[in-house]
Length: 200
Image (cartoon, rainbow, N blue to C red; front, side):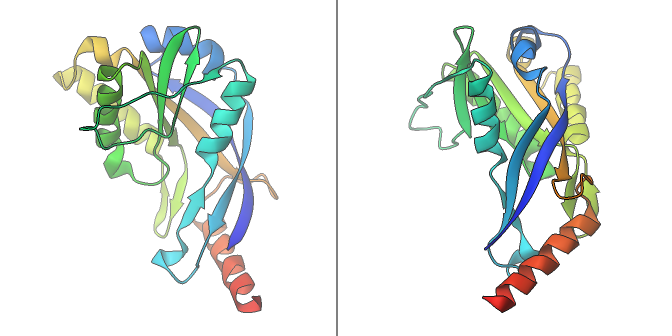
């Protein structure tokens, strides 16, 4: 296992209106930098796929900024589990982090509806602006904004529910160089993980 220090910055919210934005922007709008780690367990498996503890570090940061920990109970028929939940200003918030797969964003929006139906007042979906993969970089936040706006335009979800969902975009950087994560930095990390594996 090889660890790489990285950080998130350049946070952005979407949409910039609605009940979720009005309530949560004092908490989320002030985010500056969150340090976290990428982990390569085995560089020979699944093209050296990386795991991230961003959700844990985001939760710690929000708690330090005034949020309170909260355990949202979901009905047994809802198998999906959010990444974490908190309260802020007496309102309950479920958080879902989509770190890698742009095709799952519509499912994440559906899961937010499940959380709202189960007692959450708001739901937040975290999406990186630069997810590096073997063929380049995906901007999951842009992709999420497009899907979210299409939901509003074509009535895929009620206005009441969509007003209580907020997307949180962030850019990822290598801590050692302050360079945005991209295909090249991903390859460098995979190469280093291979070196560490051979030394072990």
